[in-house]
Image (cartoon, rainbow, N blue to C red):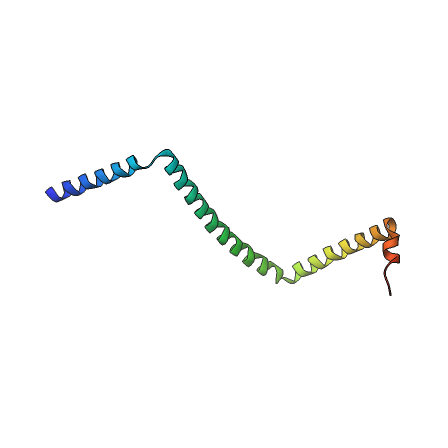
Amino acid sequence: MYMEDTSNLALRNFRYLIREALTKSDKAEIKSIVRKEIESELKAKLSKAIEKEVASVLKDKSTKEEIGEISKKILKKLYKDLSMHHPYIIDRIKV
């Protein structure tokens, strides 16, 4: 029983020393360090998850077709805009 009392007393003293030694600026610095570590871990996990999801979606045939259709629409609009508003650009193309 005496050993338990001394271990509890030592633990209380240790906790008191820790609380006493840390100032507000120390606590703020610890919080910022922990926040940065957590954010870096989350960013790494999130980027890996996004890469896996994008890779799985791009393997799908319907997604590839949809990307192709969107690309065609963009190219058509670009060509139309160039031919209507900037015909000199088309004239500069050498064949």
